[in-house]
Image (cartoon, rainbow, N blue to C red; front, side, top):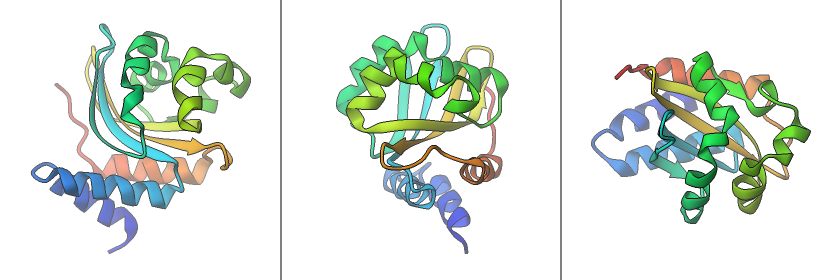
Amino acid sequence: MDARDSVIQLIYEGVVDDGALVRGLGLMRQSLNAAAVGLGVQDMASHEFWAVAEDGIDTSHVDSYHRIAPQNRIWQAIGQSGRPMTDSMIMTKSDFRRSSMYTDWFQPQGFDGVMAAPVLADRTHSGVIVAFSGSRREDFDVSDLRLLTDLRISLPTTTF
């Protein structure tokens, strides 16, 4: 069993065991050399956010995220496109670094980039599996996005 299969198995086991889901995300974080990873759902109309599980995300920043979520162009673009994307596929790095999302949520946690893949969607909700790069790492590249895409394809995409 390779790392991808192990992550998928742990995510499925996470349906009944939160610890397995966290272990699966931890393995994904390691495989991607990411600073943090998470799985969450956002109501795209109200911008209410539900964190399903995370590894490496400082949850004390949840209030900041809720405040700036309506301006999260990255999550919106990924939800609308229905395909995995990196921040640089949506906006220039200079625009990203000037955004309140970056200065108020990414930067305080030491994150410098993001990629995400939708795992569930309908007209009002977007669920993604997400990975954040740290400031010591280059941006995610095509091979990283491919690994995240493989994980997403291996998970059942759900509609509400």
